[in-house]
Image 1 (cartoon, rainbow, N blue to C red):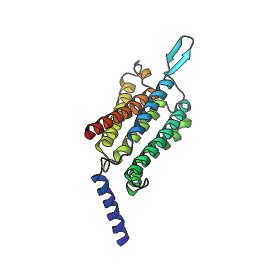
Image 2: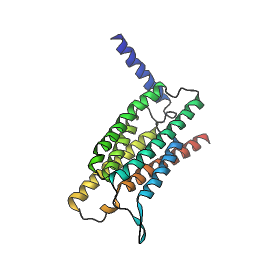
Image 3: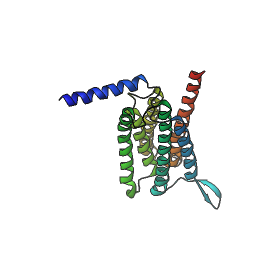
Image 4: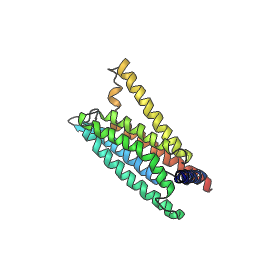
Length: 220
């Protein structure tokens, strides 16, 4: 019982420390968000275009595997880059990279991301549309960021809330179109690559720009 109390007290102390320096701890670094956002915009634009006899056309139909694997590569590259940036910040502050705070942050962030990845892999052989996969990723990523909200800066909370709001809105929009306007021409423009570029790309770029501007104002 005493060991349990000591463990709970240690976790409370870590949370208290993270809340006291919430302006320092970030699950997503600003340079990592910017580069990841630009990569998402580029891949989304590339997957949304195709060449035929009439020239460059919008690619409204894409196979599940053709959509899935390039985005997995981008996610891993962005995650590695983000980890390197966070380690650089930790070294600058003279802190250990795998500190108690980092372990707690990963413990909150990774389960929703892992669930999103597992769901997409499980349904990949079934040929689930890229649109459905993109919505699952958006929601799970937003939930992961939201899970760190107790000890992360306000910007991380807002980013997580934005992902969850967009993901939920997409589910409602998708359901409404399927029920009331199944033949709407809007459907062909809402594709997986478009969502990934518009949500993962734009939101991360906006996040990076907002944090950078705010830090410059504080420095001034």
